[in-house]
Image (cartoon, rainbow, N blue to C red; front, side, top):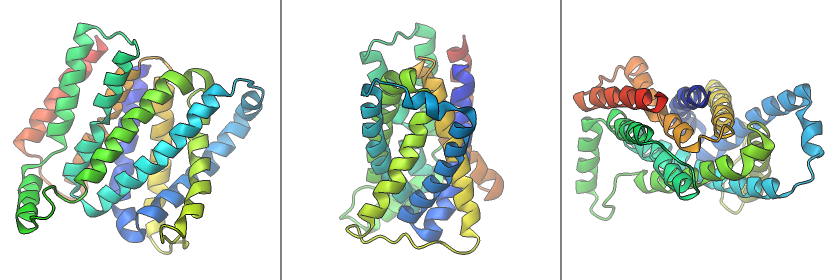
Length: 294
């Protein structure tokens, strides 16, 4: 089941990031994050009320997982703002694999925390991570980034790279915390609901100091916001349910395949042809999945 949850999260996040590319350029990073989290909160609230999980959560006397969950909420807000801003200003096929490398941080923390991984699974994890980077990076994007760097010597890195690195570190720590301290006690859905609730409470408070607007969007951008919200919420839920199985390293690595999904969607809808390194990366990914599944 851990493999199913991880792959489901990857597919959903890949679609969500594809929509986020258009949403952030339509209404900006801040408003995209706020409205997609709001839609997700409504959906999860209905689900928790319908299944009766609200009553079960309120009867829990242990506050420790809730305190960890609150920390995760703020890490997620910060990381999401960094990631969406990277999507807005950066080259998608460069910043996406950087963000996907968060799985390496989660795996490292999981191993340091005592999770045991077989030799076969280790080779599978390494192959998958390398495959993600290769599949999500195009040589054309690298060449464009080099030209941009040469024309602007003050900034040695392409736009969005630093933001993507920060987001990657944040997400890596966040999934480790979810897998080891939160989902084993609260399940997979409740923490995601709390993340959504905290986000829509915090962003309005910070809007004025950060000089951001939460004006209600108009027009077709709502389709992109709805797409981001649905697929991102589903991906987070699948990822959290996968972490609840205890196989944190495997789930986090498989979920990192989202950047490959984004690139494939760009190839289908934007008619961007896959290059040799991307095909090789996809082969490595499938090989890694097979090794992880053994």
